[in-house]
Picture 1 (cartoon, rainbow, N blue to C red):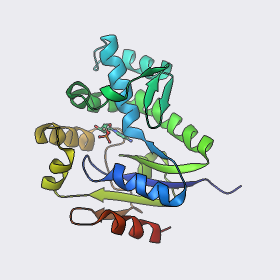
Picture 2: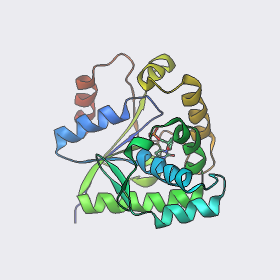
Picture 3: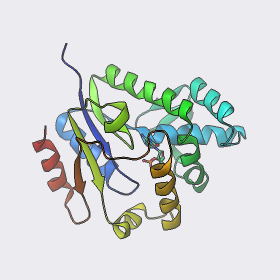
Length: 203
Ligand code: DC
């Protein structure tokens, strides 16, 4: 059996992952899985339930029991969480939730199941090429200058983005790293079409 086609797109906040992932997926006729939205959804659920994000046991139970639906809208048990995912409360807490090993194990399993169900996909995150799909057909690691990343993040304060970068890059489990066989692409002064063409040329 041939393996489903997976394009792994990793990189820090504001590196252009979502835009690039959507454009590459459209060209290949694949769907996009935004794994950051899954970590954000669990964080949002913890906040709603009044669970301390540092309480690893409780957050893990929430993650295991969450009936997550990820797509254009992100839902849990029918409740639409989409509008809560980019609030300051979630931005400030998501790195804590994403550093819990059992939460990562749970979400990684779901990410693999999603790809199996969808027959492949463009998957964006932080550890996709390094941990989730080490055999992805193409691994892309996007970067951009600090100024450009802050500009793209718009409403989110640069300090908040910098803090998440530090936590995401420094955690012990699946830190943000460049997979050894990833193509590193700086998107700072590049047109989106140009970036997409380059990625497609690697397939
Ligand atoms: O891509 P994003 O900014 O929506 O990600 C939100 C947070 O989730 C970010 O702090 C890093 C974390 N994350 C992760 O640890 N692993 C992933 N595969 C995706 C996101």
